[in-house]
Image 1 (cartoon, rainbow, N blue to C red):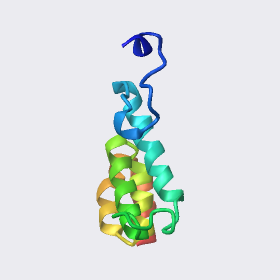
Image 2 (image 1 turned 90 degrees about the vertical axis):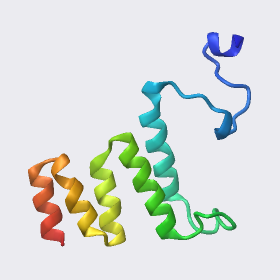
Image 3 (image 1 turned 180 degrees about the vertical axis):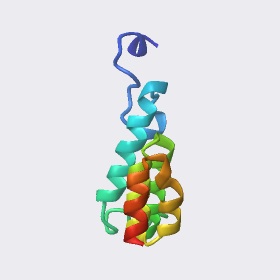
Image 4 (image 1 turned 90 degrees about the horizontal axis):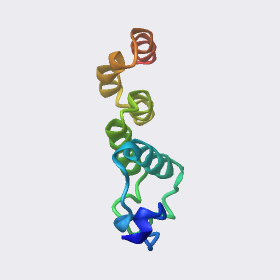
Length: 104
């Protein structure tokens, strides 16, 4: 408890025991999503995220939870899921929606 009061956080660096403040959740989700996007399949070998498509789906869900709709759409465009990207694109802007439709 003293570590939390002094601002040091949990003793372990393990992601499972890390406690994030509600204001930091968006940043934590985006950080994890970017980590998944940059990781290759060999680093994730033996996990459920060893396939590139699975990593892209997980990263897009994290971006959506973080409220980063533009990145969510960009990831879905990379996967070829233009319908999902076009459905969420108006949340970003009408111009971005037009760009997504023209890519389709």
